[in-house]
Image (cartoon, rainbow, N blue to C red; front, side):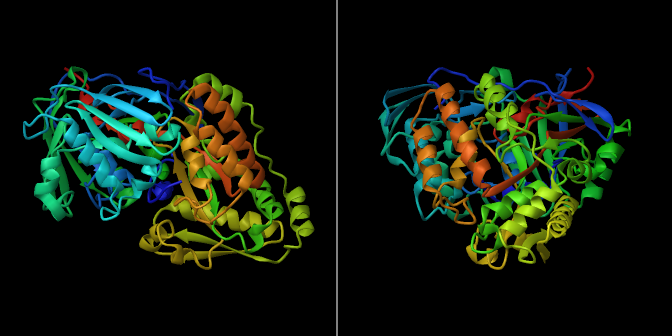
Length: 545
């Protein structure tokens, strides 16, 4: 559970690996969208030719392009094409080698990464182990203020053990650490450029020097960001099909849809659900859906109030009419969530998805039973305050549904409107949570391992917004995180999931696929949430030769 990514509900359609090279996959799914069928696929049809340029719509301007501070969709959507990680998450949610060509684990607390040779930064200098060490250590430095620093909590040391070799020593076994090197924590940038740029790094005034298929050409603050093709990119399979990419920023959902329809934006991820039907029937392009690791949840912020009693949490969950919520909040594209971590988060070992997620019971909708639980808990008439915001219709829709459901079972559910900035603050500032009992979240995994999501409910974790603490849960999580075999770890994660469902510190609501709109002149984009780290823009090209 992270943020601001956790508030991505406002903008989206809803949204130790073994030491061998790859693991995990997702399978296509079918569903309905406003009565029409849709297919879930990790990629769009392949590009048929090159492009001089294309324009991509973001729902907001990135607040930074500093990899160590990038903790939201807009910055990571841009950076995925500029900077790269030691490992790579693919569109079908596999983990494969990236800037590290291979790795070994000599013992449970040691990781050795062999770097890919002859990889050049955008300024032409060659990547070395020194760059990797400097990049990773920077995220551990309190002066950086990186939200990713918690990923390094078990790291004792990071050191150069050869010109193209880095050795990382852990204080204790930590399966998730290795996997997180496929996300922002594993990003590698030029050490020399970090020193040169100083405080300007990642700002509109600064420069980036990474290894990706595009380099940063210009950041015109308040207007656009332009990337240009890297002619010396190392991965022949992902050489950019376009000469440049221009990112524009459109916060208003209706205006974004109009930009897609008019062609002023060739495409964009996280399409506003209210525009699904209009875009699908427009004939101006394709609305596509891809793999997602996200679920819309209700995070409990106050365990000293009415929701401190698990019976009340269960009652509220039982009172939710999830099927109608999916129709109203997600444009009909989605399904009720069976657990806090979505089905897509189990992609690391596909056979375990069927075993540990698909077999979970459907969430119960039982208003009479819920009302009885509230009465048994002595909570009838007690106040529950839910944060809501005008930042997107989806938040308001879900907040209103929670209020109606709560009142129907005897709770005094009140909505607390907050500004978009204040809503974001709920996830980073404990003071902003005062007086609130629930907040609508949209939690997802950066990697296809469900244990990543469940770490944020561990006692004392940054993402544990309500300071929930359960010794049995912590022990189960720690046991799972010491198991390096993915299949066996999935079995242990199922126990963690079981406790989370029993205690409901987070109430699951619904999950939906990732969305992308592609105008008629372009194709080739990955469709899923892997776009946060996979160089998705490199595969986009002309729809016709």
